[in-house]
Amino acid sequence: MTITVGGEKKEVKDGITISELIVQENVETPEYVSVSVNEEFARKDDFDTYHLKEGDNVEFLYFMGGGR
Image (cartoon, rainbow, N blue to C red):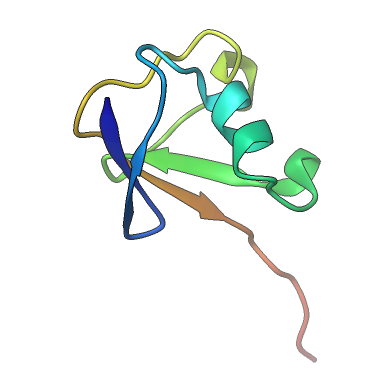
């Protein structure tokens, strides 16, 4: 099936989970990543059971603290 990851169309296996996609995409520091699917945040507790669907738009996001 085809999904969009970070603005790039990708072919992935049908029903891939968010956790599987994180591994497949070699996401750096996966323990700190937030994931949005179709502009809605997925809960970290659901990454193992959230199955992506044809046409989904996935973004990996990191929230950085800092400043003065």
